[in-house]
Image (cartoon, rainbow, N blue to C red; front, side, top):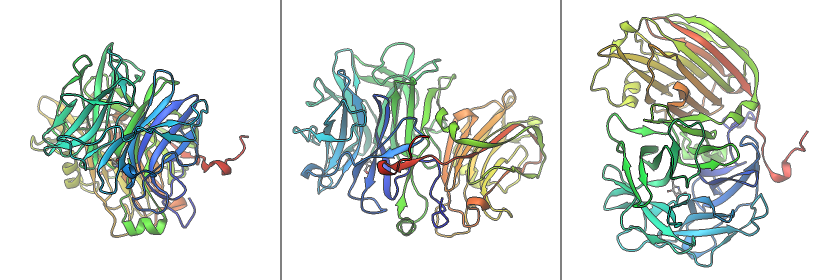
Length: 540
Ligand code: DQQ
């Protein structure tokens, strides 16, 4: 990153400038990965929303193409909002997206490629039948958007859900269609919740029980569960359940926002995400919008706002109770210059600098082995909110087992630091609770930034397992994965001192018990090549 742009990233997806929000219509088509995204062509704040379009052969390097869908019609005068791609039975892709008119009333629309034999899918044509779905009856026209990828039922009808709010409740409104143009609303929604408001960007897909592959969205048979994701309250929440396609019923195992079973893709900054099935590598991949946590004035002066997460593969954990998210394998090809340690004590009170890598642009994996667990502080049964617990017990507050973890994007004297760490508490019957936190409160000397501390419980048994942490550090973003992807926390930070070559990386232990690092590996990361088509370097 240039010195006047210390917060631009080296290997995260970004347009050259301006505002970006939700990932849209990701797909794999004829050997090419496509990413569309909500984009303002004219400024660094939200507005004039257009579908920008980039393509990749490996999900790491990207080429920006011309915009795919721009607001040209009255039904989308206020923007072409989020939507999804579906590859139809004849192999051709289609995009369903939301148009918002000048009153912000929302309609679902169709666009198809002008030339489906071109793998780059450069030009898109809007259906003459648009808008296909209008907000009628009890649907609130201001809260009706973000159609999903369609799946095909046993009756050969396509199904989609559209996010909404009806009677103050979050809802996934179901539609069916034979021809992808005429859509009929189902008698009942796929799911609703009286605990939430509007559901933005719903997603609905199968995951395999015990399988190591992802599943195509229309897979309905076999040992599977279904995932329903909805975006609300600044987070992407999901529930698991059984979907019965004959009746279009979805019976959930847990409820949204219920104490003790509130499951999120990420417990930090991560919103409006969307998954797709990669038929080449047989996996399901997730993209998420990572918001800024600086001010609008900061965004205007830096000329851009918004990142996309590193794409994550999605699998059902072997417990069957939650998902596992993990950065796609391809990102590892950017790893260079490695440092590694085995079996090292991290004594009580110690701070140890991880030397030799470029700490502002790095990938680091570490696993901790614990002993003396019986000494752990007792878990209070009223501690149900992990974020609150992390806010009360920040990285600087001593404990017994932990806090231990990493200080990333830290200045030499530790004046600035983002702490990603664990604490372990004891429940009765020698059971333990592992808390993962990301504490941004000291991330920058700059004022006026949002520096919320995030937290998540990680379902690991520290008696029998090591506690692993991976952090992808990229100038102003830290994506952390606890317990091999059981809990993810993404943070945005804007250090003043700890930038570029002045950023440092440390392992620390502020607990009274020593912990052991069983393995630590860190890599500097090369820059990804993310450029407009004209600027693409010749392959070497
Ligand atoms: N962003 C889009 C909407 C969506 C929201 C508008 C979520 O379609 O509900 O840019 O971030």
